Image (tube, rainbow, N blue to C red):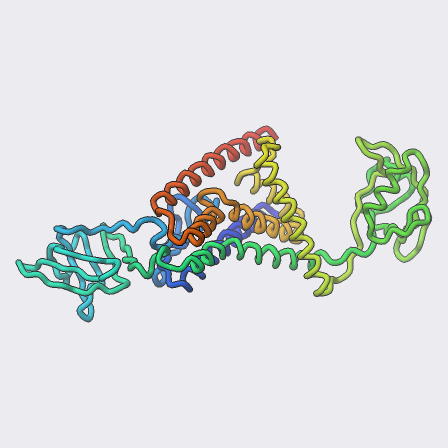
Length: 418
């Protein structure tokens, strides 16, 4: 597989993982009636941007995540003030556009000084025009245009904080859930593509090894060891070989439909007792029920492994080299992609599951922390001060970025050190 194909697979994988996560937030936010201002893949400067409906969709430079920016998550910043001169555009008697500058150049605008306004609850604007006060209703989806940039107003009922705890909980939880569903789907695809192992098949034979001396060939199917049927139990095969250092082991193999007897003597090779061959499997087509069961077992096993790795982080039982940032992840992903489609599918499933579990951790700035705040709000019957919550998330995000920088620096050092 060439470098362009590998790079395309890596970009596609990260795009799908992040996009689906943020789509979960976007979908349930829109179902709840929340105004989603931006749906972004990546952070940093914009590379590509377009607006559809109320939401601006953007692709940003740093492919290390994404976000769905909802009205009311941060305090709404109004770009107008009493006493300010503005230009407004009316449609059916309602203000649909409010220009804070450059309005002298635009036709068909009413220009006046703001005497009073409410763009969240009452939705009205009072302007002094030629010394007379005029009160105008404001369209709930009106735009404030400042320096050429449009910002849709967010009435209270369109803001994140105005929705019920349950609606907000679903909106936040939907991101990780989408990654869990994607992980299961990818594990299911892998189960179908990998097939069901039936017998153990020998892989590459190392030159000069006991396996080569015994005339074992790549593709030989192991039927029995010392009279014990092996089937697909690779662990038992390894156990029997390692239990016989320096002692001949009788193998019955199937080679092209013919059963052959081969006597091989395991020896110490490196740190283990081996015969010098890789092991693989003969497979058959996976049935649907087997695929579902296999995908579920794969996902539960990987979940346990991920939780164990997080436990090591919490108790401090790790070294810096145990962690990988974007550079290390991309490097390892490239190695897996070069091994074929099936390993790449399984690796993508693992990353999707990891993204879901990591985001559910109660770390400030992550979805898990926001869910904790919502649970506390439900228990105490009133929300936590939004400014305090925003400060906690900001500090958490800054700490995560510092950790990301440190891990990425370590990745780059390892890359240059080979």
